[in-house]
Structure formats: structure tokens, C-alpha cells
Image (cartoon, rainbow, N blue to C red; front, top):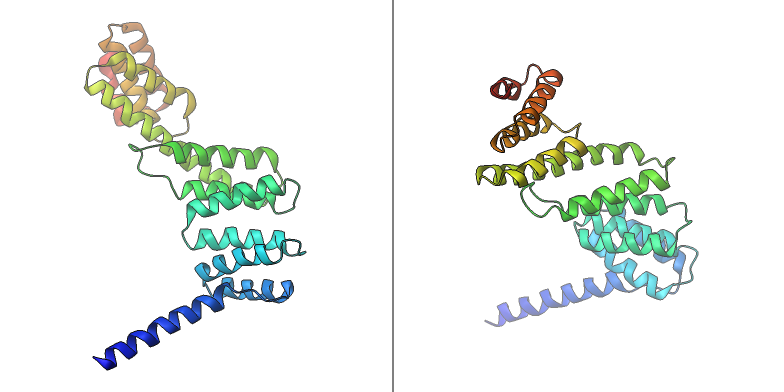
Length: 242
């Protein structure tokens, strides 16, 4: 019993000691900044995050403050604290609108939202926020080195949104709410023309028009599908509407 109690006390002391070491800056901003980078370099992202928070409070006017804020964004993101990295990125953009690293913060804002996205049939809000962040990066920082990656993410995000719209549209269609399904499928055709789901959306658009007895519109949608995607399985199914 005494041995177990002693082991517990030692363990608590070690944890407490480590915690104090990680979050207590010194009087030297330069040395503390180097220490923060060491945490990053060794993959100790939680420790780096805690230490950099203390760094900002201890050295608010240091020449390293902006770099420390960028490091903390990175540490939070790598530590999978995506809401925190989102908050820190937003704060940096607002605080340093003309800083050379603001484009990075904008990119990380998009990435933070991206990591919070879910399956297509669930809440698409984080996906839309990620789209907005990446589009703003491309618009405001066209020479940024993160543009090419942002464009790839944007396409994937657009695909996810298109999948979400398709899921909702098919739900309406299967429940015979054909006006609502028509609106959903039309939105996909207008907004997500490069998405892989465009073929299926065109088929269901034709089917929705057909269910509403709008034969000409159904035929036009089927023709468009068969013209653009002649080898698609959905083109074969759309033959019924010609």
C-alpha cells in the first residue's frame, strides 16, 4: 500500500514538473522563441502550443511575436486542435493584414475548416467555410505559394458540396417532392459542372422534369447528358426521356 502511494506521488510530481517546464517562459524572448521551435521540431505540438500561448503573454512586443503566432497556428493544426487553429488563423489575419505570412494564415484557415468537414449527407457548413477561405486566398494572394494546393482542395470541396446536393435531391425525388428535387439538381448542373456527380444529377433532373410532366425539359436534360457523357450509364438510362 505504501509502495503504491509513493508511486502515485512520484507520478503526480513528474507530471506537475513537466507541465511547469513546458509553459514557463524565461526573460529572453529570443531564447523562448528558440525553445518553442524545438518543441515544434520534436513533434511536441501540445507543449509548443501551451508554451507559445505563454510566450505571447510574456513577450507581447517582441520582434518574434508574429512568428510565434504563426508557429502556434501550425502547432495547433498539427496537434489536431482544428477549432483552435481556425481561431488563431482568423486572429492573425485580422491583427496582421499586411504581414508576409498572412497568406499562410489564410491557407491554414481553409485547412482548419477542411479538417472539420464531414460526410456529404451531413452538415455542409464547414465545407462552405473552407471554400470561402480558399477562394479568398486565391483572390487576395494570387502569388502565394499555397495557391496550387488551395485549388486542389477547392475542387475536392466542390465535389463534396455537389455530393451533398445530390443526396438531398435524391431524398426529395424518392419522396415524390419533384419541384424541390428539380431545384437541387439544377443547382448542381449550374454550380458544379466539373464534379463527378454531374452525370447522375443530369439524369435525375430529367427524371424530375418527367415526373412533373415537363416533357420538353426532361428531353433537353437527357439530350445534354447523352451529348456530354455518351458512355455514361446514366446516359443509357436517360434514353427513356427522349
